Length: 171
Image (cartoon, rainbow, N blue to C red; front, side, top):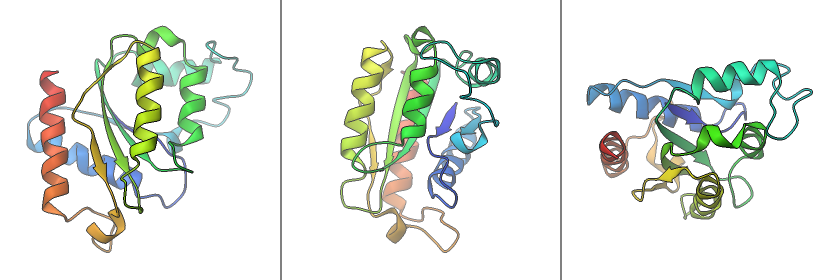
């Protein structure tokens, strides 16, 4: 499972997630993509922490519960990761994250590749007893390493993603 953790229109993050899926397909690793922008209307209405409403519960049971391995693509938002994804986690029953194997990719137009956001989400995931792959990918200045369609063209970045997907598949 690959998750684009933003709902921001025009974000590069879903494009990076799609490239991750293409690389996984090339490696003969089946995956699905889900993005926060795909959350149905009403997903958060009436939900309380750890007790999602029926709409969000369906999303969780489709995309999170059956996944044993998840790759999160996390853009940098205010020195961290998107609040919409934190809210998604907060409304999820904590046990659904337990023992999931999770890989992290930081995406940023700045120089650090969202290192702070990756550190923040690592702490949250460890608290939820998820297993975080040590091979974290930091894509800094992603706009300078992408073509006019937003696809990453930097061979080093693509190699890092491929290595992470390979590592996650055996993690």
